[in-house]
Amino acid sequence: MIANEMHRAAGLFAPADRERLLGSYERVLRLTDLTIATRRGSSLRRELLRWRDLVAAQYISAGPSPAAHRDAFRVLLEFTPTAYAQRPYVGV
Image 1 (cartoon, rainbow, N blue to C red):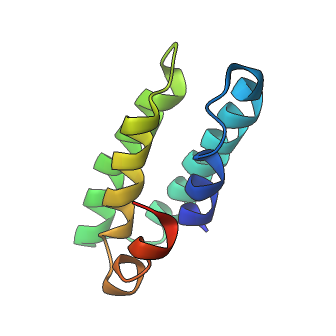
Image 2: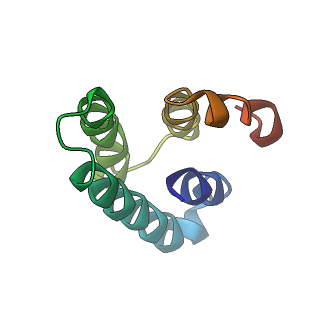
């Protein structure tokens, strides 16, 4: 679900889509928080907390960067082998 929202946000970098992009980042952050809450004591939890900081920086920046978004999305997909296999289909 987090990756779905990141993929959706990838097409929202036009100035007219700023509010939709912020809404998408809010959903990404919320979904990440929910996932982190279920991963007590997991190394994935630690990595998700670090990754969340990347998305939060995009959310609060004056002008989110498509390149930084793409990099964060790529890192998210590298967390699990199943998600990693999807990289060619989403263009990261």
